[in-house]
Image (cartoon, rainbow, N blue to C red; front, side, top):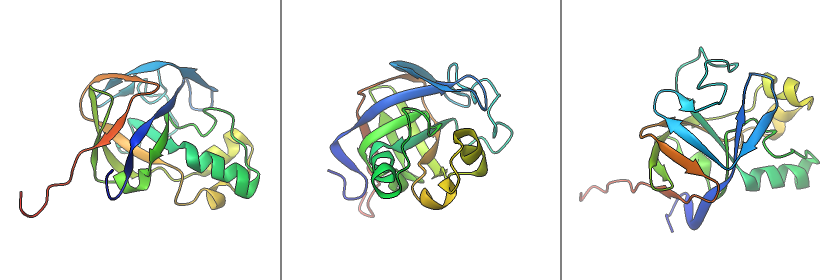
Length: 168
């Protein structure tokens, strides 16, 4: 197990794509990741996302299943699958630790975490849940760039690329 961010069971628990900035996300068993674009069929890959004209550091968005479960326990905020509007729901990996780190999803897709995916007013409006920005602060997920193309499947393992040590 990595000292910072993953367990041997780190994996993709769900994949969601949304056709439009406010359209409902749909669950899919797999998705094709394209560097510089995103997941085929998703709003950002098609240039239709709310933040499509922002810096291209969010070809992929991820959220921890454990955060969704904690929001339900701690704040009675219950999200339906995909309702966080993040593409990938993960299990057993601390996404905040992946900012600036390379990681692999399944055998093919390499990514780099670019910054936290903090909740915003848009998420509050689309989900009709006030105060999400406050209760999700610091745990809204991760934005990532896709470095290598490939297929991401539900159940794929997530492995973090080791950080070189000073001796390397």
